[in-house]
Length: 382
Image (cartoon, rainbow, N blue to C red; front, side, top):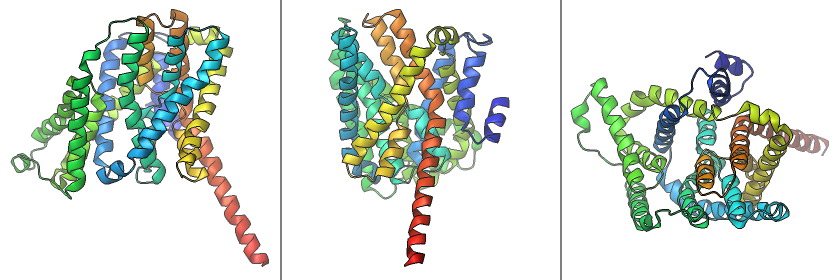
C-alpha cells in the first residue's frame, strides 16, 4: 500500500510497487515471507485471472485477422534471438544446448507486465495493443516446443509423446475462437438461473474462468490460454456483464501476488556481487529486444513509431523464461551460476521495463508534438 501510494504520486505503474514489495518482503530482503512456492502458485492464479479479463475485452475477429503478425513475429524473434546469442556463446565456448536455451529465454516477453500496462492505459483497442496481444499469446504457446527441445538437447527424458494431446487441445481452443468470431453473440446455459444472486455468481464466474484453464492445463497447454478463451466466451455472451464485477477484486489481489512472487526471486547479494555483469546484460537485452521486435513489426508494415513503441512494450524478458531456466538447470544445460545470473537478468528486466516503456512513450509523443508544431510553422510561413 505504501509503495503503491509513493509510485502513484510520481506517476509510475503499480507493477513496480509489487516487484519492490517482493524484494523487500522476500527471503533475500527482510525474509518476512519465505514460502516462495506457495506465493508462486497464488501468483499463477493471478496470471490466469488477468488473461480472463483481457479475453473479455478482445474482439475474436481482430485476433484472427492478426494471426500472421503473431506467427511471423514470434518465429523471427526466436530465430534472431538465438542468432544474437550464437557469437557470444561461440566466443565463450558454450555448448550448443546452452546457446539455444539462452536464445529461447530472451526471446519471450512478459505477458503479465505488458497486458497489465495496456489494460491500465486503455490501449487494447489500438493497433499496437492488438499486435502486441497476439504476439504475447503466440509466445506463450511457443514455450511448450521450447521445453521439449531443451529436454531432448539436455538428454532429459521429456514427455514428447503428449504432442498430439497438445495439438488436440490447441485445435479445440481455435474452434471455440472461430465459433465466437462467426456468431455475433452467444447465450450460455443456466445464466437466467443465477439472477441477481451475487454469491452464486462469484462461483459461476470462477468456474467459467478456471474451468477452461483446467482443460488447457490437462492438454499440457498454457492455463492462461484457456482463461483467455473463457474471457472471450464471456465477452460474446452479452447477458454476463456481472462477471467483471464478481471477479475484479480477485484479479487485483492475485495479479499483485504474482509480481510479488517475481520480486522474491531477486537475490540482492548475487546482484551486488556481479553488478557489472548483470547490469550490462539487462541493458543489452532491453535494447536488443526493443529494436528486434520493432524491426520485425516495421517489416510487416507498421509505422516506425508504432513499431518502436510495440518493440519497447516487448523489451523485457517474460515470466515463462523462469520455467525455461529451471528446465535448463534440471537438464544440466546451465550451471548454478548461469541459473542465478539468468534469474537476476529476468527479474531486473521486469523491474525496469515499465519505466523504460514510459520513457520511450513520452519521447515518441514529444516527437509527434514537435513535428506537428513544425508543420504548423511551415503552413503559417506559406
